[in-house]
Image (cartoon, rainbow, N blue to C red):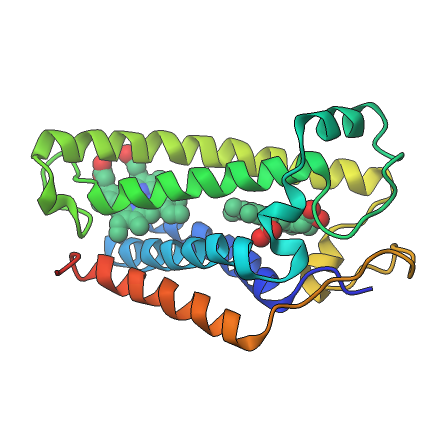
Length: 214
Ligand code: HEM
Ligand code: HEM
């Protein structure tokens, strides 16, 4: 059965590649690539946030952000809730946490300045040097937080795999063969919604990279 729409899957795998490039580029001093990949991550994250409101049913925050009571009930008896399409009650919060850290990562990146003031994000001119340095420090810290979250993310996927729940194939193909046909299927969002989210995300990315002209 279909559980992830194409935009959500594309978002995920592009994010993996671009976060990888963002990391590699700082390690190797390719800051021109860092700005390109960083702004691309910004576009992806803006798209995903919009998609969380107007996207396919399993991508929506309203569908996978459940009450704390539901999360506790899930933790007590993970199998009782059955296999439902989309993120489980705990996974939903891990997704939002990762997105939040990515927001901090890109926002601090566009304001960051390096020690000698040479490398700087496109909006750093709005801040003093010291403020830009604080942004750079938070940028560094949030990357550490992101690395921790990604490790936990991968461990969770391995854990579910050991328990017989395969998650990676559905994130690639969109289909989950392990779900019974009686479960509610994915409800896709139409192309107009997709184009709207894409246009807004690209416009914002362009505007920020151009130094936010008014
Ligand atoms: C997922 C997105 C991003 C990741 C994973 C990321 C990661 C990093 C890392 C690991 C560093 C080195 C920090 C250090 O060692 O102190 C760095 C530095 C930097 N990044 Fe990003 N970054 C991202 C997005 C951005 C964006 C969107 C911009 C701006 C367009 C940006 C601008 C900068 C600047 C100017 C520095 C140099 C700061 C310094 O040397 O103190 N980054 N980034
Ligand atoms: C930079 C590294 C990564 C980041 C930042 C990341 C982030 C995310 C995010 C935000 C989601 C939620 C998707 C959505 O609803 O839009 C997600 C889901 C998922 N990711 Fe990753 N991911 C990373 C690496 C990986 C890797 C390397 C794999 C596989 C080997 C993977 C497998 C999955 C799977 C299977 C799901 C769906 C989980 C579920 O069924 O609830 N991720 N990831």
